[in-house]
Length: 188
Image 1 (cartoon, one colour):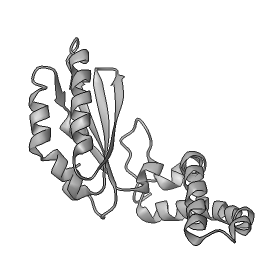
Image 2 (cartoon, rainbow, N blue to C red):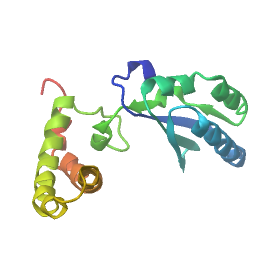
Image 3 (tube, helix red, strand yellow):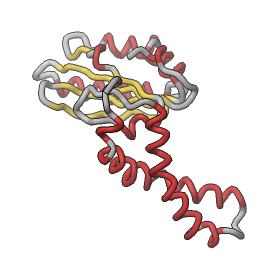
Image 4 (cartoon, rainbow, N blue to C red):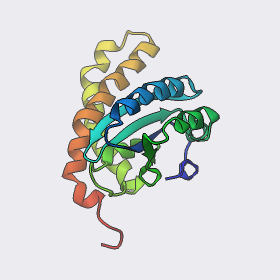
């Protein structure tokens, strides 16, 4: 997916895939450390994580940037091109497997498949179904105990409690429970 296809001004995550020649894994891993340091210094970078080999010597990098424009700047930069030139004979990037997302659709991904994210209206409705009970519970249990706290501190409590619960507990279960509805092909 081209970064120019991404919409919105929020954070963007891109998964980049490399095919490493057998026997060249050590050299590639040395390269990953250097390119990661370079990417982390690049304006707008919010982190790089590497997923180690799966069958076929494929490595994946999960690259996060503040927005699609900064990701595009990195992908088209001279620094990145210079690092990629060092891979000659070691590995090749698998461009057709580049995937980028801009937000909560990652809550709804199906690992190991090429299934597309559901329509945004379904994601909004599913997120509401998951977030509303959590919000109600937090308001009932936590809000009264923090009523005298300064507003910025009270406001921080809500996302600190809600987001991990949604991300790790509620949304994965909801997306599995509602998968037939979420991923129904258009026209069915």
